[in-house]
Image 1 (tube, helix red, strand yellow):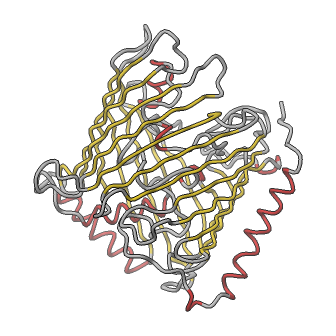
Image 2 (cartoon, helix red, strand yellow):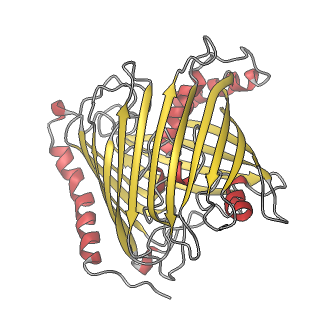
Length: 448
């Protein structure tokens, strides 16, 4: 069954396409003396001009490089130290000879449920591994440097149910207990392959190719399944009908150091396992306005308002954040510094979709993250936080569902992080007989 586009959908897609094509010309003409300022804030807010969380290849690569340099940890030495040192030297040599930056990150999760449906698993474990590379091709060292990004992602289970499937399969939970932690078939896929021009010093950046838009729209650097929270509701924006990794383009214009406008257009039939079917002519389009209420905040970044439209999938079937039908919606995200030292950040999210076009009809999330919380003496580079989430799913015969998450992350060894996560699931959407369940998780992350 083919979904029917809403009226004026083609006009909206055409206008966004024109914007993406026309902005590079305007950017080249801009006075480079007026490059957007880069503030002294920490974290990932100014590393990548297009933005997103650390599942985005550009942000992930910076995160890996930053973690390689950290040497403080609970235990000062690791049995993997020789491998990490040799890998670090290899990366440095590779960059000197080829201008290619590369990184490898491994995320492993163990998870246990307090209960499950009869005959289903109440525990699972899976690994998510990412190989990311950036090749500096044009205008090296200049504001409009051009980079080719390549991102391979591998996921596999360990003879168990993947934790991402435990939520819906064992509890009837539609926010999932573990975003990303489920096997791929085949194990390894090309998740991203795109060219990007622009840098934090340029007013404009453009990305085109195979792009994962759900690591950009509706996300922030503080809530990510790689390093903090785990549920769809906390880490993603699935009240947006986000297509899967797909052919498309994203452009951003930084008016100044506080205000930016992002536009995107993608194949609505995108599928991370292949290259989608852009010939069908179904598109997902979005405008995302970002504003920094406190440009000098240490860690808090852009607050954003996203307006989006989807033509739906060609067969009306759901994929990723898209439920299949054509429709539209909006999504608001606010980041706020909550402490004088800047190490406490609050994030509030609200999204609403129409015409049953997205995975959630409505989504609300309130999150607080504490960096360097001084819970255990002199241990640094740790973080803790909690997230309260509510969703109203589109799925038939479901009910609104809530959850609360608490995590603590710390460097166990140099380049190895351990996270402890507790999740309370309130009124699982597909199980009207269950009012509450718990999930307990351990996550190990290492980089090379």
